[in-house]
Length: 223
Image: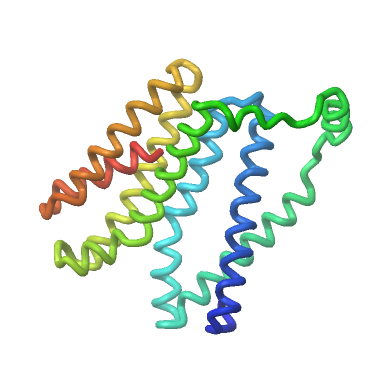
């Protein structure tokens, strides 16, 4: 992405980035579940670290642009490459009990795909699909939307992008305190309804105070 503007190579780069990102997410979730016996608190803490990175990323871009001007985004990409290399090194040092896994696999039958017939599986898959669509939309277009519609200045819109991730970080850390004490169905129902309500409020208002509160509510609900 840094070295070329060729559309074909960029598509290939994004393809491998997406595959890697998805694979690492699944691996991280799987390992945390295995180590902590599927603890919701442990998973929420893992995801809160993602929120920390997303919160810091805009400031990384701002600093990079101030240092290198229009080429600053390349410096941000280099920082990401370095962080990825550090992750690869740390992955290589992880001690995974392969013997335990092998024994577990030997004691299990062939993988069953019966879950594909379960209504609850498709409902949850749908929730995740639409959640990720909403998250990508609000993260990718929020600043441009507010600036293009002249609702607010670029600086204030960027501040709201950081506020969103502050809210997500607070929400994820708060969920870790709930853990297993609150039924998952209740958490899912409340957060899904509240996110929809705040999202509608966000898009239907032109008042900065209302939008700011709506952004914070969306972030807490998304968490």
